Length: 219
Image (cartoon, rainbow, N blue to C red):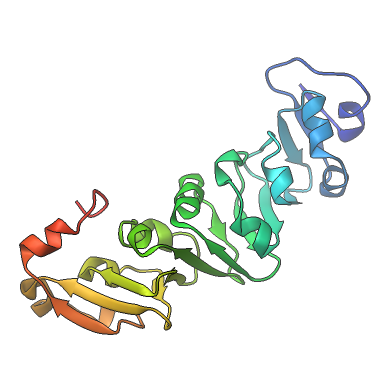
């Protein structure tokens, strides 16, 4: 069943499996998403094709219709502390109203599962422990934005492999001590034009040493 906002909030509770509220962007954005959920609404469709929602609305329990351009807009503080596992489906992008946001690896991985990118105006930083960043899938982290995603260890140190150091879409912060560690064979054959900015030093290690520090993400 499909209803407009006025019908959805008329004091009737809908019990159908799928109940879509379809109305203009202005009408939908002006209403309480909690009230829509309590009325039994399951999905939201903007008849004008776009929606801007905050994090509370994005995680209210409503899903969004594919074909709409749905942007999650909120502050850096809210986005940096958010549990992204609660997002509704079909959100297209996230935009920090402060044009910057710091996320953990876990948050970044969850966002990546939805296929959501941050707005091009945002600077996205992965701020986490050395071990969390070193064990992360750098490709997934780079997918968060069309700009380079900044990796920042909160302990000030990172040891990365050649593959990690040359991953498209990531860059290291200048304040970290970043060491590129890989085998002599890999380093000798490397294309150093692909190495990201702010690598401080290069260290040739044995294959055994390298494998001892690998996680399932590297294997």
